[in-house]
Image (tube, rainbow, N blue to C red; front, side, top):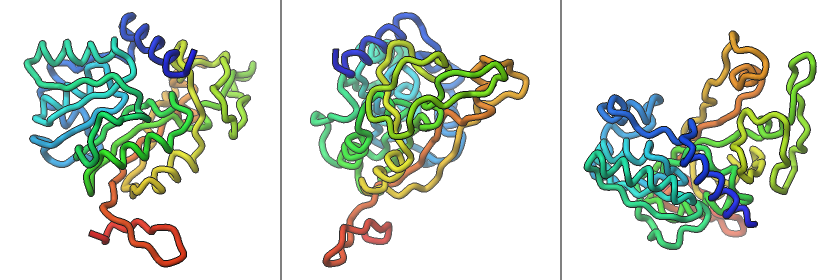
Length: 268
């Protein structure tokens, strides 16, 4: 079974079983959609009329909030069950959302420079080559387009178990190139999914090489000092599970003879 088929089945199952990862947007969230989407102030003050791609983002949350804020929304996801949640919620709220079943690293159905914003929740861990994802996003974004994404940190994916002293053990090599093995610690792993570890040089370096400038970086707080050992928030005290990035697509490249292109925000 290919990694695409495995992940499609895993997320279809999560959607069918009402997983915590398939929570749809609430009425309260839709009343203030940008506040819900954007606690950091990364989005423009209004997205009305903007073309937004919610990438690998099925499930009836991001797409619905952007549509409620007046954006023209396309949501791409590998899982048809996740996309049905977007379609159901859009219909229920009388919103317009276009859904496409596809993998995040192969988007030939989307035209070049057709989006102002690409918003991608945690999902790059499901593909072997994150560079392919970033190249596709760079292609479909317009100049100065915004890319907001969240990724699993590599160290978090290296954890395999904890010891009798409740210390977390790294058991996956940092340069592990293949699908991640099954491990005892499942705190930040989705049941049945095929996942890959992406190193920092891939998460950040490949994004820059695709023509993006990183404007901000945060590590979402998932720690609780009151959490008991074995709880995911106890683990979050020791290893940050995620990183969230705000990046901007550069319009043009300036090339110095004999060198690779240099992407600069001043080259308009």
